[in-house]
Image (cartoon, rainbow, N blue to C red; front, side, top):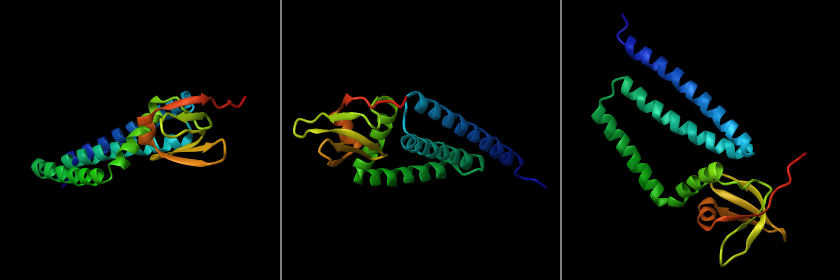
Amino acid sequence: MFNHQKEILFTVVLVITMTGIIILTKRALRRFSFIRSIEINRRKIILNLSYLFIYGIAISILAVIWGVDYRQFIVFISSVLAVLGIGFFAQWSLLSSLTASVILFFSHPVRIGDKIRVLDKDFDWTGELVDITGFYLFIRTDDGKNITLPNSLVIQKGIEIVERKKDKE
C-alpha cells in the first residue's frame, strides 16, 4: 500500500533536524548579537543568509532522499551554480558587499552610533555611523552630509573608531 514509507520517514527526520538546526542557529546568533551589542537589523541579515544556506542544503538532501538520479542532480546543481556564478561575476560588487557585511557582523567591533573614520588617503570620511545594511554603510558627517559606502570598500580601506557611542545607563 505504501511504496514510499522509507522516503516519508527520512523526510520527516530531515524536517525535524532542519527545524532543530534553525532553532539552534537562531539562538546562537541572538546570543552572539546580544554579547556584541549588535543591532536587530544586522542580525536579521545574517539570520536570513543562514536560513538560505540551511534551506539549500535541506532541499539538496530532500532531492537525494526522493530518488533523484545523482548524475542528473549533479548536472542540475552545477548548472544552477554556473548561472549564479555568471550572475555574481557580472555583479561581483554585490557578492563582495554581502560577504563584507558578514565580516563586519562577526568580527568588527564597530557599532551604530560610533564616530568612525574610514581610512582613505584621498577622502576624509569621518562621522557618526548611522546604519549598516547588507550592502552599504551609512555615515553622517559632522557638517550634516550623508555618506553611503559599499561594505566591500569599507573592509578594503579599514575603519578607525574615533569615539564610542555612549551606552544607555
